[in-house]
Image (cartoon, rainbow, N blue to C red):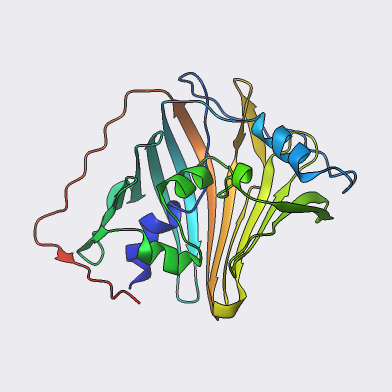
Length: 266
């Protein structure tokens, strides 16, 4: 599958923002604290993390992004529209022209790419294989919001200190190693790692900075690294403008004459 076709998928692996009322603002990074002691139990860290639960109806984000792999490096603009728990649309533009569009719901993934004149309609299996972990709509939504892809209430975790952050290590893994790093002031997620050593693939999502808007903490930037054996893809996303709880539309129609992508299931 061509990398350009996967551009919308790349954005579905990111994190973004949120708030309670419609607003436009240029955010400033907040101060953060390092972890102090690993004597704190996992449940206490999780409780503090849950204090920052997010409540909203819709969100609209304008972002810039840089994609890089072994074959190319490209800068694009993106618009991400979200209706919580229902749908996410990602629009990729180059020089103001829409080059790709994706629409995902809890049931399906759809996207088209004007570079290759191709489109895809299906489920999450291809996205999960590429990213190295099983994903669904709600996990992707959590990544956009800077939240854990794991439901902490359903798992067991071991606490340690690594890279100056609290690290929660999932103990029930089924062959997948999961690590979640949280800073020690507001217990915001700084990094998520999902590794499958047997398949030699991994996904790492890092949130270098957060801002605080309407008493809610929002990521300012997302760095994503996806690796499959020797193949590596890097994404650097910066959020330029965020609007909350506006009325949004999600128009999606495949241009006439595009060829459908058939992905072999393994």
